Image (cartoon, rainbow, N blue to C red):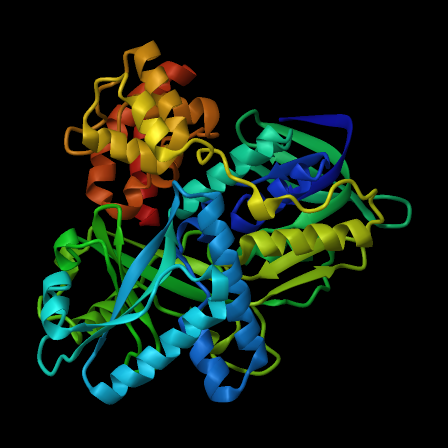
Length: 530
């Protein structure tokens, strides 16, 4: 290992390459600031790839706001619904509206839920994305055949948004890069450096790829590390108090047969007062989530009791029962909630965010949720400009900033894709994952004669591996399998079956010495992480 330093002084160094960090990188760089983003592992390798894949204002927050006359909860819902509209507009290939059905078993319950969801839509105002309506039992049975039919009256339907979370991080970083932002994964911050007044002026980070320790300086250092925020704050100030209360959210994936149509189900209240979503996800069925207080761990996994909790509560509402043998994949994400002033359980904590500065000038952002990543980034950059007395360049650009992949209309992309002899199944997959960049993926297929599939039962072509190495920051096979094509998240066995082929392609392109080591490492990572 050797030490390398740079004379470059950045305006922002951002630590953390998840939803918040990537949002800040885009906001700051699009305003004209010189930005470096550092991520210790792969981008979106933490909680940002382990969400419920929903863009929402928060139905459960609204219920609490009404019952407790809580303006804080109400404001959070309103902000989320405003941000939902911008999210859907700025990343239309990754983010789409989703119809969700809420089954009801009494007409009193139906009236209560309809009134709540009507208020949810009214709060959205001009930003609402669909009407609410009542589905009778007959229609619901056709759309949701798994739903328990005994005493069923029907369902109240409403609309929220859904998206591909880790793909969104990559799109944000690609867009930030187009504004000259530098983004580096597998670069772990080890220490801070300080000036004569003991104000933080830079970082030392270890590049795992080159085995080099670098020192770089900036006018502002931002800690946007999600569940690791307190760990980084302690690196700066070993007397810093914790600001986070961590919560685990697990999800399981089961076959599409449990949710055959492209509509979700909301179970409004479990026996312990929580909400469970059952959602269509990449031709499978996604179920989540739990909300339990937890201690931080690098590789959180879904515990058996949490899996049993989800299965038990879903089966209370399903005639076609789910069992453990149906599970294709599972994961656990650690939510970084702001530590409450009292001893509220984590499911009752408002998902707001906090921006704070240490006595040494390290700026940290904590809390929040995926839906409001853009607003959080805007507020963080505004705060930093004022706190660090940075030259004001341009106002925030991100309200209408289309991300990479969302520039061309879908019809135009399909027209250009027709120049390549690939199936409709492959085209649909490419379009969903890459948007208009699907055309570039197919050009890579032509250039490298890489039209073949990585597995005959899946829609992913070999050119995607090469494209993701060249343009989407892929350095390890797990990056591609888990966070670029998302296969590990929907079917662990099929992901394991693709390891050999993905390693073979990467080995040729990246000139690895020993492919067998990479194969073993990747198989171990998939088994341990999911």
